[in-house]
Length: 387
Image (tube, rainbow, N blue to C red; front, side, top):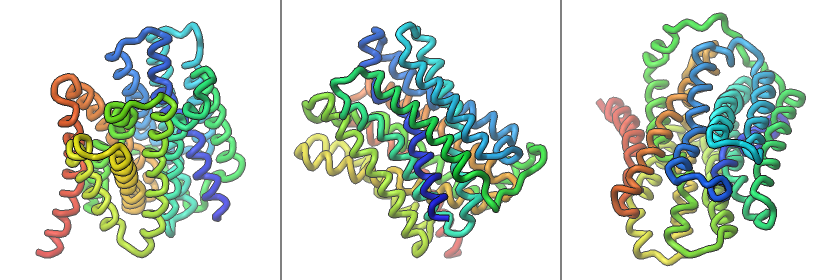
């Protein structure tokens, strides 16, 4: 079973490398194609919008619960890799670039939430630990394009696209032929729309979902703008910024693994609450560290932020998976992911707008809105228990 978990984690890591491949080469792509800053901001959100669209369609159709998850994972990885590869075409237009990123995101909806379902179908016991490693793979996959770019600074920017596309296909093949579907999978019939309303009637599930959505307001916006946070604080080469960005984001992979292991001894709610509180403090403390910290301390602060900003993700996913009815577990995870990523688009665009409206240092405390609202869900629950 450990071997299967390792394969699932590596596959998730490989496949999600296409997620931030566009972000890693954003400046090079913009320079070569003559793209405006506004267009680049839209480009960042294109993957998220594609993911939202895909997860909504997957959730409404119930595909992940009606058909083989491992087959869906394989097909999605191949098509996502293809559209990611299209980004490297010399003849691609601005609209083509947007469509490339949109459809990459669309088919990632058959990878990330489906990967979680595959793990849940294999590891019903100790799910927190399993999803801790799985989400850690996602985080590492998100960070890896920055590492590839830092190591291939003398190579064309397209190299990042080639490598991430190849990794994506390899991940899909490994799931299909080495893992397949789990013993706890329970195929469902045609999805009933009442299932969505029933989901929110389960209190533990509702709390986990709302906490997850609060956490998503901060997470992807932070990841998206990590290179900018470093660039504005210190004058460094593009290679060094990419390497530091990888380090800050990849720290979250360690966080997911650590929280996953610890979840066997400490309640997931407690761990999620700790992560929300610390990452929220990091949001609010940005002006202080930006203005008064040395470059070394500032990077350490970002690493701590990168650790706790995602540490609660596997906790929320585990709580959702365990509280959701088994017959619509995959659909529930997909639906929750869909709305979560809609929130990331709103957050990214809002921060982009604030960057041109107010001083740079006062933008980032707005990310604390998500952790605060997420934390409040558990605070209400604690109050109810006391009563």
